[in-house]
Amino acid sequence: MNAPSLLELGRAGQALTDELVIDAHTHCGRFNIYYLPQSDAPGLVEHMDRLGIDRAVTFALEAVGSDFVIGNNVTLDLVRRRPDRFIGFATMHARYPEEMIPELERCAAAGLKGIKLIPAYQKYPETGENYFPVYEWADAQGWIVLNHSWGAPDFVREIARRYPRMCLLMGHISEVYAQVLRQCDNVYTTTTNCLRRQALARAVQAMGAEKILFGSDFPDLDGAFNLAPILYAQISDDDKRRILGLNMARLLREHAGVEV
Ligand SMILES: [Zn+2]
Image (cartoon, rainbow, N blue to C red):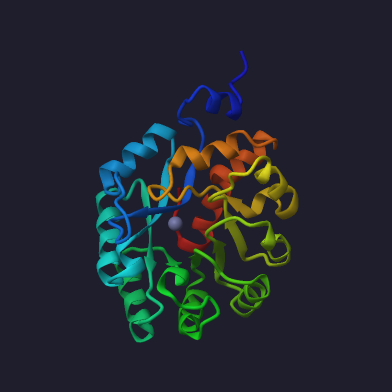
């Protein structure tokens, strides 16, 4: 008998235990806006096991709106508890530019592997210059920088070309960025919120499956809610596997020195 397809596994509600699945966009810790269950290490791992997610890139919600040093410590604690499951990214606060580079140095020395930015929640423009030293630092290290929103496509193109060793991840998928993704080798997108009918199949056509990475936004959003559109998409199982984990495994190897 043939092995079940990824669609059949999804329909049966089975965990993807035999597949490499890396969630490129998750959160940990506590949020100042609303309550999130399962945001500590046991809760996150339970959720990942239920769906068959091997590894998750994660960043602390405390760092979004309040103290980013406290938030980064939450991420570090999580990574130390379960280094087999989590890859931690450091978060910066746009309003404290003088603290960014020392905090990045501290986080890198302690074991975080990339950067998550979220200027929209810090009432700071995506194009603001406070982040430029962070890009410069990430470029020198060849690090991944995931941004909730990078702003207009022209700005993304400009930054990607000015900092060619930095790997830019769009935190949320949008076809608006299709051309930039095709033009710039160092720009990728997570699938987060790819919920409209056939949106992922269209995105694969417009951007290429090799530029798309599974991202759930768990526990801010439900993991299955963001996994199903990949399993149900009218694309090949090979493309689904690229999106589910193979693409991110390569980026983590090349930009973070992490073997998954
Ligand atoms: Zn998020």
